[in-house]
Image (cartoon, rainbow, N blue to C red):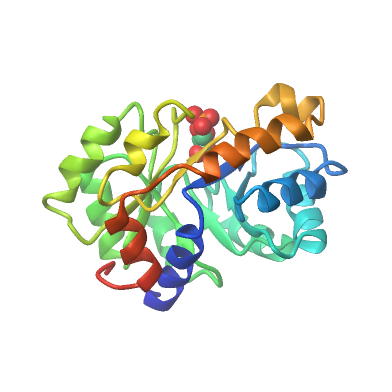
Length: 227
Ligand code: 3PG
């Protein structure tokens, strides 16, 4: 578990932002993924919220091996096998029941389980997770919440998502316990519908250039003091 968490931390620390992609256009998926990787965002979350999401993951895994592909919106243990078989190298959940936490802890790939409170974070730590998703980050208190949690839970690292934008991402990334942030703002619906690669590249390059708190990125990269 520890080794797998550290592998995910190492991947997540490669860029300040994980683009969260909800896409049903399988034909566009490899072009999109390649654009994100070349813009400096190698970790890409594809949500399992569209009818062809697994095909999108499959197409990217096959054609863009440089992408570190993460399956998002995992809400039930039954989705784990499907996502891994499609080519996902990690799993993300919006929130985590005890049953889901158990399944993720024994999954064949690392997981970033979602939580929205200190009690939920503690339950995940009991399952061995030291790097978690805070969701919906802007609703549960934003950067102030994450800074407050750092006091009692200094070893826990976060990837906040939900309500993060180009304008406020820097506030989250300045938190000492934030490794990276996730969000859909890099791949807006209209740009995906129009297959607007230029617009997405511009958003992705700006996101990749965001600075992070040295502490969180450093700890993640070295795999030290992260539980
Ligand atoms: C997620 O799945 O992580 C969120 O839906 C992303 O939220 P956003 O659309 O507010 O970025």
